[in-house]
Image (cartoon, rainbow, N blue to C red; front, side, top):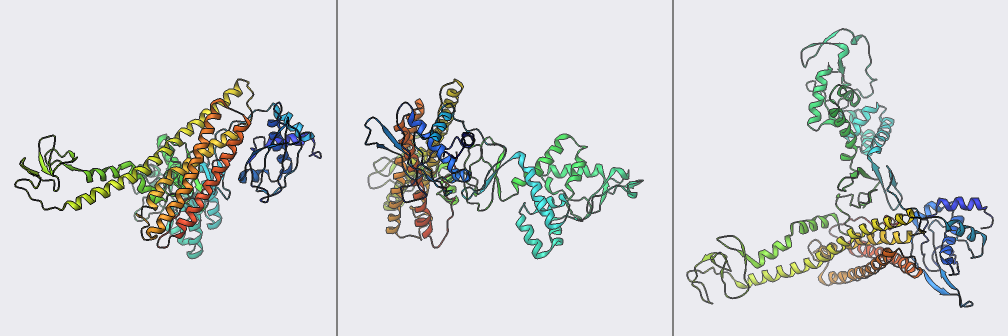
Length: 622
């Protein structure tokens, strides 16, 4: 550490002053571990933690960016006694960086530690702000890119430039080809290699794609007869498309407006009989310059949004109201991206994040919860509609002769209207001949099914509601930190608390859909032919053990976060417990997903199931 100048150390520290020390695996796993002992006296413990950050900054300058993104906390933070000094208390932190850099050693009296602590003494925590216009997350763990509305034009131009290089055509022709191919450059390249450029152009309806732009010449002098309106128009007031057909600009303009109103702004075809060639986008825009501004803006917006609406690798963020961003995946569609507005969703189906549920499971679960189908099943099994007023009537005892509050009597077995005269053995003038055992069995099955459904529904609803509350908790925590900073109060590093809240939110996103997953997977509804009864029960017990351990740790962290957030506590013991619980939850989620992917979904034979893998860095970056 002494070989670096003070200015160099400050520069490195300022570039990553928000680095949160992350606990690492036990000794024997990962690179060498640096143990730093700091005296807990008059704030020295806090400065010791900052000295650790400074040590890591100095020793991992070249790999810092990758290391912060790939840090995997797996160890623990613990208190240790010095032994030789009864008045001192010590804190030992262990860290690991996936970048592979070696960890240096720092002592409390070292010059580097003292300078780092004194410099950090007056620094305040930087509160995370919203993402910018474009946020890229294309690493191995997050193969997607967040696209803002301002970046769509740039992405379209980049895609068109790539197609221009392939086909050697005009820029506007390349965009027309891409819109026909739904912005799939791989399909364009495949058809080009297999069938040639002419096939690509003809299939996309692009005519004379390699022709130079139409300019002024001898044909632009004199009068021409428009074959649409049958009027003589000056040649300068006519427009010729790439297919060679020439009509007056007014007719072209009215044709374009009609096509736009029908939702065909991205594929406006030539007016000539049996032509069908796609009109040049730039010429359409020039024609619309003489139309009301609203029509031109609607055309431009339709062309821009085609990159989102027609592109299979792009999906609009489902936030309400829409944040204006979209997500583009760079590979597998089974991913749950997090938009810059904080919305996490399944890219494959566009629904809320539901892993470990498959998209099919989640669709069935939404049908049950939104339509309340299980309640309807219970009503159908326990009630009968009155043949007169059609209101449901429940039989709570007695014989099979039932009387509705409206006064109508009917048979409980068959539901037919009857008279009032009856005995325990039967109803006068009525004999339905239905077996009672069948009804009792149906009632028992419906009651058990409803009870099982309510068990999973209540727990899913509880974690979903807790996730919504924790989003509010995070906003309130940020406001409390900002208020301390604005008031001049010494607001130190609370990134450990923010990370705990983020880990809590990520755990709720996993725990909530884990109950619908258990409802379908172990209910033998979808995978009845895959597992026997004994094997299914064993799998259920293994999963529920992992689920319950995760749930208990989540509730423990929720209590710690609440107690620390109320008073913005920086008590050392609370901080240690919070960090350890955050790390523990991370590992429990990883183990639960490993069980689901390998031991449950991995054993399916007759069918397959794909889910978005758990991304431990999604909500914990920074």
